[in-house]
Length: 216
Image (cartoon, rainbow, N blue to C red; front, side, top):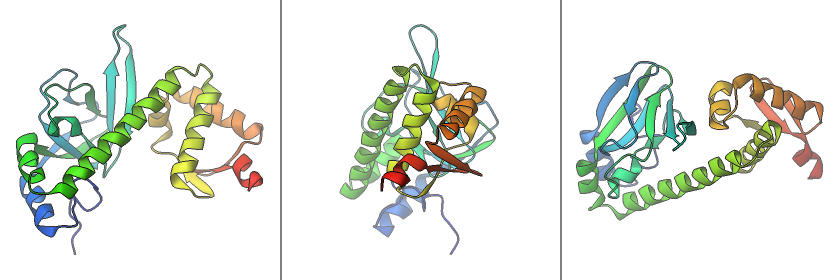
């Protein structure tokens, strides 16, 4: 069976095939070149977006004019959930970090489907709760001046989420560095320092948390 755009998306898919088919009928495919803005902060919130290919940066400009990277999203991830629950303006901006393919569903269409599917509504709320958790993490990063400590905290969070002996970064090194408010070279240096201190062991594209392994 051919993979559908919604198959790896907890919001856009449903246990009810009828609902999933409704979502598929409303999806519109959009392509964006590298560094193209998908929507800007304070623009009208138009609907839900699903990343199919590439990666999308969600960011916000502070009152001081500094860009704060909130999240880097890859295939299967969604953004724009707030519009579905009544948000009128985008609280942040979305930019394609590379050539990307994104599926879009207008908020009125999605709201029509939500009215008929409590399970889908619950999935949207769950996604927003995760987004709030992510914002709390961003705030922690901002309040952590040490680059090494930021990276260590992020690795520990990934370890808890993935619950595996070897964990994978949640994006390319360059993108994760942006998300942590670090330069790529600073991020790489922090990883090297953590490995030298015996806290982690780099294994190609995977990371082993030594401290946690030895304590078990």
